[in-house]
Length: 199
Image 1: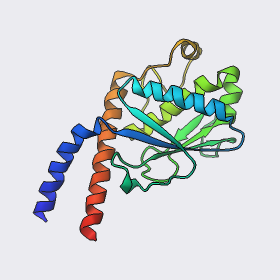
Image 2 (image 1 turned 30 degrees about the vertical axis):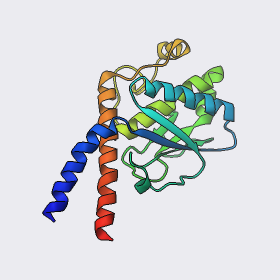
Image 3 (image 1 turned 180 degrees about the horizontal axis):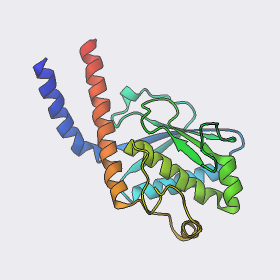
Image 4 (image 1 turned 135 degrees about the vertical axis):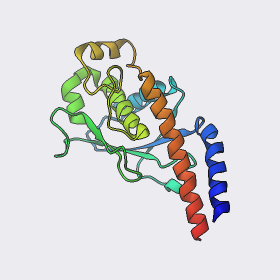
C-alpha cells in the first residue's frame, strides 16, 4: 500500500509539469435554434481567448464519446446551448455552470437570452459567455473577478470593449485556471490508478 502512495506522489509531481501542456476538451450540445455559424465563430473566439493565457481548448460536437478515464487531461467539459432558461438560473443570467461536476453537463448556456440582449453581437457575447463559464469549471469556483471576462456582470463599457478586442482574464484567474487544469489532470491519473489497482 505504501508503494502505491509513493508512486502516486511521484506521478502527481511529474504530472504538474505535464499539465501545463494539457488541452481542455469541450463538447457542445446544441438545441436546433442555435445558428451553426454563430457557434463556430464563437468557439473560435473562445479558443483564442484561452490561447492568450496558454490554454488550448479543443471543441467537439455531440455526445461525449470518450470516458473521463481515457483523457489524460481530465474529464471533458460538456456545454448545453439551450433555448429557454432553466428555473434554477437567476433572472438575467446568460448561462450557469456546475463547477464541481466531474461528469454530465457542466455548463448551460441560454442562447435566447444572449440573442435578446445583444442582437448583432451574438457571436461576441457567446464567446465571452463560453469563456466565462469554462473558466468557472476549470477554477472549480463560483467566485468572480473585479475586471475582465470573469466579472459577475458586464457593463455597457465591457460590451463596447468586446467590439474592439476580447475581455481579458484577470491575473488571478489565469493562475486559478492553470492550477485547476493541473488538478484535473492529477485527479484523472489518480482515478485511473485506483481503477487499475481495483482490477
